[in-house]
Length: 440
Image (cartoon, rainbow, N blue to C red):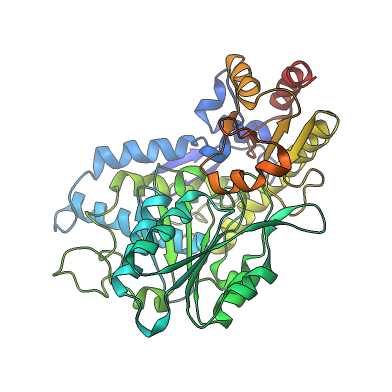
């Protein structure tokens, strides 16, 4: 038994005697998994470990106070909010001097930063924004709207490559950027195609033209700890509710990127006061408590010793997150291979994205059926307690691009099965038994 601590909670997490917890141990940490529902919609939002749920309750019982006071609950509340920002800095590996802002959603944070760029104007002739159409609308729409505020918005299309896969072309990006380019936006992983893309190369191309780079990591962060230092990007955004946390989002930015913008908060807050200048009304305090509990769950996954999760006023190490997500990847790899092999055995099914091999993709798998509607397949699965979904998943522009190739119907999109490390082989077998009938 190991004791793990965060700024808001102290509790016991039990695992097997092995250095790393096994699947049974892991599933026991998630109350929702005790139900009859098999959760295969994890790309839409992950389940919560018990330590995260309890952290919120603990915070609201002991520290539910406004910030800025000298009395003890207020001091604890301030420490809670600060700790959450520091934890996300480590999780994203934000470069020294950079900052993190927290908000209600990735869409909201991208709108926030896009509006700040609009407020900064198009001086110096840098008025071009290049946006990958493969992205979730959260990191497309806010930038596209800047066309009405004097910016030239250039859509970077998704193209079929020699290997038969669809992705944004780096060669195309190199042709699109120029001395007028202000910013390039793209996802690290498409929430439809599931392939991990070379955002570091895209960043080098953007920086070579003197432009900033914002990466949408919403579909990547649930499966691997993002690394802003390695990528070299200026901005990185993800949804915390897809990484075992609260319905919030986080955006990391470098000191240089923040330095060019002025946040929209009250006029009397100095522009260099981060994150306050960008967090209108502040962020969710109880949400911060949930974010902080990620370190407890990461310590559990990593087989960490007592204290490695950090204590009050301490921040967990980057190495802890890397170890934890290495365990996530290990568990997911076998599940993904089984799912892809099964779908490959169905002649009327076509996977939208890499259809074989677990390397270079996350376990978010979309497909279409030659004769059956996506809605029919998903709806009947839901009736049997199998949590899959259909549609465009807010990647509407990508679905429109793929429609001619895959024969997608406007109101149907794709069927999507998205796995997490806590899914079991037994759950997959349940899904396969249903698919044996539904897919023919």
